[in-house]
Image (cartoon, rainbow, N blue to C red; front, top):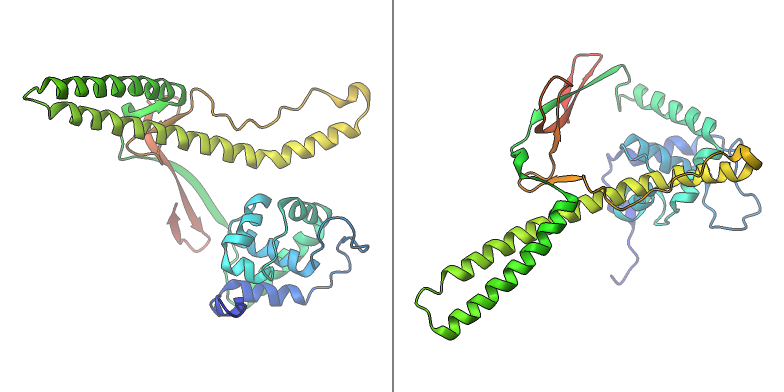
Length: 283
């Protein structure tokens, strides 16, 4: 690109981000706590930080780490931040130090949006239900068992390759069955490795989400003195539990049951949402 891009050309004119930016610009930010000295970590305009929080929360992005990632991945968020990238600590600190002010401004923005017919504010009822998945629970495998099978399959494939080599040297007539058997085992091993990778990714994502809460508890513990500090806080562990499972045919589903009296099935936990006017949706 020979010229710097204008991000305004990348965001649709009817995107909610334009409304959020204009609405927040009208707020008096004198009550917000900012670093007036401008020393230490990078400083960002409070109007921009508030707009960032409101826009991301309105789009269902609540984790500070995910908001930080959105400043790189989401075009509308990059436009809002002027292609700058506040880290998750800065975002989290701004929200904590201005919690009440952020809440008040968020309510004001929602009221403005309702008056302009941009959204509908009312009571929303949410309930969950189990929907059977297109997968058999016998195809689910534990993380530790998948690792054992991967190693076993590696040995079997190595043995089959050696046997194929011996067959080729011996010029046997039926030499086609062995490569097919090798391919079958290779595909199974690949699926098992993918299942373990998905389990590891979920465990890592969970640990990342718990990290900020762990750090907050550690700081609070250090401020206490003597025996008042209490027990040591357990650090989030990205290592999957041995019993964590993944389904080879339907990785998005989980083994679950409706209640204590029903059996376990491979299923989804679907959420039914109904608003005050009776409009329903599923997710």
